[in-house]
Image 1 (cartoon, one colour):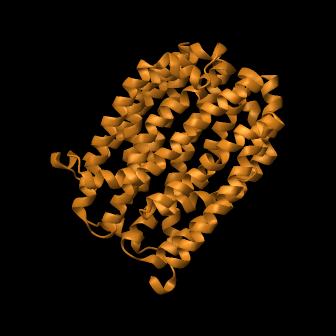
Image 2: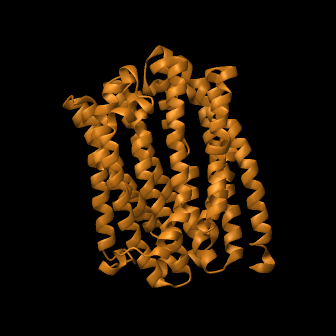
Image 3: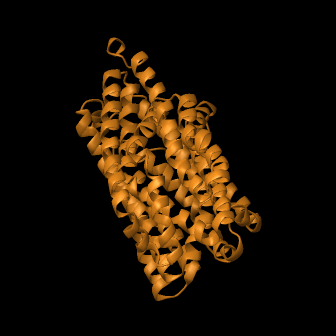
Length: 450
């Protein structure tokens, strides 16, 4: 069962492996982020800045449902990586089958609920005033495609767990390119407005699903499941849930943050303030792609070697990943500090937004050089199957620190308090994660025990 591709995770040089795994992941995230970025530029220039705010309102709902797929994918992939490392073929196959069944059941159920409560959900997430109507148009169409997106997110992590990062990269590129092409046709050429933007996004999810479906049917995949593997297994479901809940909780917190930020900023500055946050949010997705790529590349290497009890390699993987990711984070920090004004003008020419966004963006990215420590640290505990510390560390940044800060600081500093909350939360969560990760390395991954 352990083929050359997965066996390499336990044998090749850590530095080369990390680059081999992280580069395709980074490229895939880059293209996906560029898709979101350019999509926002198209919408802002071809429809208007209110449309940018409308899409930002819809994101928490669609992201949360899609996050189910990501959570099931990452939780199951941690099991698959460790199963491949310990040469347990049946557990890997059964886990993958359970991932598919669980994703379908949960996402379809949530889509039905989401469509039923559409008129109450949109205002709750900040879709007020002029934002409501375009947000409703976008929401209803995009929600139809979200189950396919969830399956794509789940399948992509499994592909990476098999040691096939290039195929995972292609799976991320396909919907990005498709969305941009369809954006141009449906918005610019056919003048379909928000409906065109929504259908372009939904069709891109279907394209990605088609590719991933082909991959698992082809000879490229090691995981050849059959009908019995789809039957839910209580023990596997429990393990998927405990590990996947880390990712789901993180995405749920992201949705709550969107809800709070959209409402807080709308009260402080109306539609323009929500649009400023939408632009900064897109830059967070885009600019951090190399750091997130290293984090994604780190997961299967750490999981496989931990399963194979090669603790010296796990320790080296952690340190190398942090070194690479912090270096890349420093480059991102420099770029944002220097080119903030130029970046904003790409999205919109609205004078209020152009004036208000650059300084806010600089505050949001102020702690970027160190945030990689928090990301890699939380990812380590998830990769090795330690769900509780993974959950707590994952939630520390956005849940335990950021949400209280955005509820408190704006009362004293107005909109500036919102932007200051980002670097303060990053700093505090990084210090906490560094403490627990260092203790884990000394106790569990020390040379004597490897």
